[in-house]
Length: 362
Ligand SMILES: NC(=O)c1ccc[n+]([C@@H]2O[C@H](COP(=O)([O-])OP(=O)(O)OC[C@H]3O[C@@H](n4cnc5c(N)ncnc54)[C@H](O)[C@@H]3O)[C@@H](O)[C@H]2O)c1
Ligand SMILES: [Zn+2]
Ligand SMILES: [Zn+2]
Image 1 (cartoon, protein in one colour):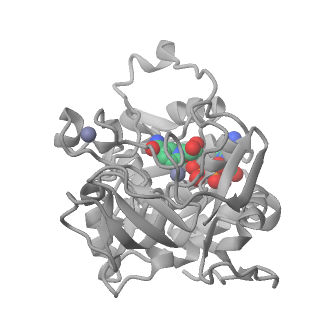
Image 2: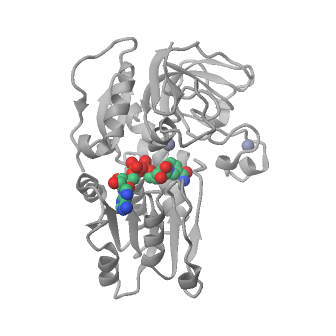
């Protein structure tokens, strides 16, 4: 098969790789029909995730068709179309029993495209298939469902649920990348009073408006002043950090009201200051989290019912064999305007036409 293989910092290649086979009785082999790239993949390519060794096939988000199952797999069979979750689950360890799959100690957690070969390939071995894939109904398009592999559960669980968004709340989302945008959309499920999006890029702020932000503001255009103005100087009820930078995390802790919640979603690679000299007196709650994907069945139900529009997040579509081009377009988001890039379709076919730009619609 062909797969996107990490060569070491700075380099990936779409090349021949051995077809995966069933190694454990709980495995499924899935043919990849739709796959996306994540900001985390870009971190890996830059060499920021040292656990990922050269030779690893990247990717942790996909939709595909089961082609083979191990003897112990009960819930899916060859021919089933499934969503592959970014987090696998052994189902037996103490964390899995609490539905905290991200913390799995039994061989699951975030392993795909990290500790084992991932989904940016023609075929992938998914461990613990019964708990790590979700069968899809015909009502759901593969290129919509693939957004439920990572970004929607992450935004909803680590942002909206940890931040305990309530009706009437003023919610600030700092960072309007795919995660921040999905946080805006899922925060709306709770009827907040207003959602304010903060980003550096105009294209991202425009996308935030389409996703349902009531106000958008450039990170350099006084977001703290705007939040103060809109909340009578009190601060926001909920502030979500969806960038992963010291300055944005610190800004979030300055924008929260006394008694409010700061939900950190961003992955931080550098030390971040926690200003307890200011915060100790404010009764704030600060949460951190790795996605568990325990909300995926609920999000999937919403999507199946047509109540979770997502298509406007996929800005560029490619054939699977255009993986390197997709990395280039996704990696230069500021210039290309990409939000999520998705690949799939003809196998072993190099499509030379310019990438299809899917028009955004609210
Ligand atoms: N906790 C988890 O389980 C989990 C899972 C997946 C991703 N993440 C993390 O969530 C974060 C967001 O992911 P993404 O895919 O949307 O990333 P992204 O890089 O596509 O988006 C980040 C956005 O932040 C904006 N930004 C950068 N600097 C800024 C600043 N100073 N002020 C305001 N905005 C700024 C960028 O313009 C961009 O739109 C990343 O750190 C990612 O690694 C966390
Ligand atoms: Zn991801
Ligand atoms: Zn487990």
